Length: 152
Image (cartoon, rainbow, N blue to C red; front, side, top):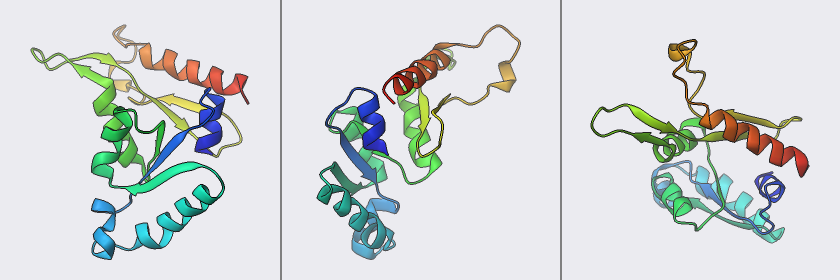
């Protein structure tokens, strides 16, 4: 699904990393066997099917490698594993005031019968109606949805 979504975004030959579920990808089974027993065989099948997929990559380094351009996407194993680094990379904070200056980040949910994109910062009920919300992430989410729809 990630490969198809990236193709819909104009990336013909995508490089996909799969984040490990366990710390340090399980340390050879010492911290859990899910990465060995479930993730690795699934990744091997994707590679056998001709996809450029690597992993499981430890969650504490995979997003740094994504930012460095080594991958086009990361498949996270659970919500916060993906959302925390996206927010750290997309939110700019004024060091003097500690307030957010810019917000950027889009969540794309795959595997649904519809195209679903959303802002990564949530609903922002705390600032609703105050005229201070930043629309950047909403515009980015709409742009991604439009790109995915036009290439579906």
